[in-house]
Length: 228
Image 1: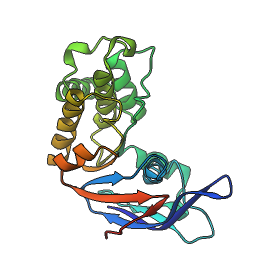
Image 2 (image 1 turned 90 degrees about the vertical axis):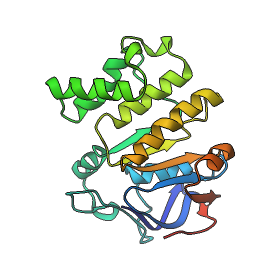
Image 3 (image 1 turned 45 degrees about the vertical axis):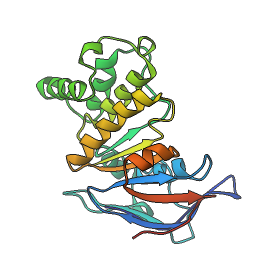
């Protein structure tokens, strides 16, 4: 469960990245976050994994419910709890953010080691996720040797290797041609079919037509329509 209750986040004292946002996403949903550049999509995603927190003094809060955990509440969360939350949230960035001095295998392994995995379990998960993202043959390639579509698939592999309950994707097809974009979307379709909650920021209208999931549309930091 992901719930925003009257969340506002102000940058540099005056500009509101998001403004009085309220909505709820149920476990296992696939939701598109839409809007033009600067509408507040990235800011909203950052509040889900709590890189950003709501403005204090305004009463807004973000609640994240995960299996086997007390609800994560942005109003009273400690840093150690934020780290625990992020273990069950995978994030796919538009600019990939790969470790340039490591090959595909080690980029994925790094994400798993941070979560405490090692040994046979780590190896098994890497093998599985590289197969799912069609990267097995590229396991020893470094980022500069990969196409844009391959780099994005590595970013996805890294995000899902820990089997998170929630996957957030910030314009994951924004830098890709149509063929590579379709390959990336197939991965997200499979993730959703397995029960993963997905929140994907996009401004790709063709993508929205092909995947008719619920949309939360932002404009100047505000939701044009609210869904609960």
